[in-house]
Length: 253
Image (tube, rainbow, N blue to C red; front, side):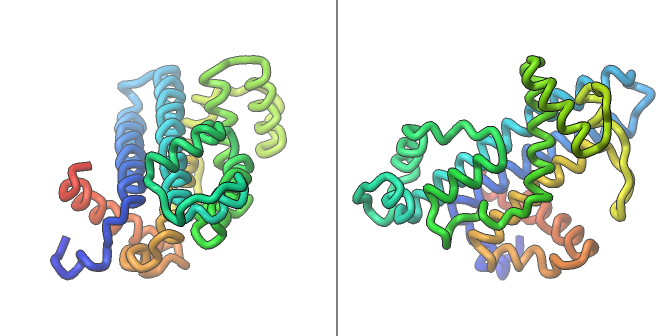
């Protein structure tokens, strides 16, 4: 990173969480790319198993990320959670104290996007709430990934019912398809052709970058100079990868 860039990308505490989530996501995507680029080395069953394993790992990373962001946003402004709990708290508290309060409310086990938005509204001030900006289309795709993960993790009747409902409502699929096969199916859009799993992982990363934009617009705008066009967004993602690579080394993340 150039010396002149240091003032544009301020390493606020929440950036650690964004960068760590980005790095984990990137590592999983790179491994899946190796699989898709060498199809002769893997059977269809192997690919399905890898897709399911990476999905579970990816959502675990996502849950850790949103929990840390939730705790951070409460720590920097306690006004909303003070009202919710009817407590007199200092305006700002430590990250550990915030985590203890959130954990005491059993808010560190979030199972859907609607639950996340509801919890955030109760605990985070309107000014600092990065979750309130997410549109339903984006949230619906996150919930699709959760439906897939739930079946992979539990294989219960309830999780299978939820998965079948998602298939039927969103994709008009009226029979059971394994999550691995569904994720490995190749789809096309204006960006190119890729496994469906890349779509979901891209949505998670989009939400992470939107959280970054809400919490520090200045540094976000330095990377995403043009976020309105597909080409500008893709260029921003490439620049973000380079910036985060440098910051990972600088801050030993």
